[in-house]
Every structure is written in C-alpha cells, then in structure tokens.
Image (cartoon, rainbow, N blue to C red):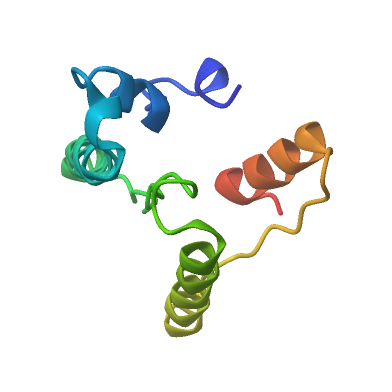
Length: 117
C-alpha cells in the first residue's frame, strides 16, 4: 500500500518480526517485549538515517499483542497514554476511521502523511 508508492518507506510488520524469533510461542509476553524493542530500533534507525538527509521523520510506536499483553485492560490503559501524548503534541493529527472501511482509513492516513488532509 503506502510503501508501494513511496521510495525507501519502511514496511515494518511487527508480526513478521515476532515470527523471526525462535520458539517465540514459549514466552509470548517476553517475545512481545523483544519484538517491540526490535521494531522500535528498526524504525528509529530508518528515521535517523532519513533525518541525516534533512527529512522530517514521522514517529510511531508499535503496540504489543493485546491478547498476551494485558488484554482489554492494557489496551484501555495504552489508549489513555496515547491521549496524554496527543495532548502534549499540538501538531498531532487524528484520523477518524470506521470499522470495515480499510480503504477509506488508508486514504485518510495517506492524506495526513502527504500533507493534503
């Protein structure tokens, strides 16, 4: 999707990273923590390299699996933390989505990334 139309965009699939860990199912919680750390390191490296070229990097945070990371309670707490971060970053843009409208959500996110929203 996005990476197909943007040179050097990083397609960072957290599930694929987790799958690269040997026997990750033996300790899914720790695998989730390690996967998150690996994903963040990869994203940071890519963004820092882009920053070195004078580009303004986007900052993202990969979440842990809901089922093995605390369930709905942890998801609600993560959402609360996200709202706290959003309140401290006035340039944050929120993209409203509707369940089942993947193409519309993608188009809305792309418009924000491209600066046309």
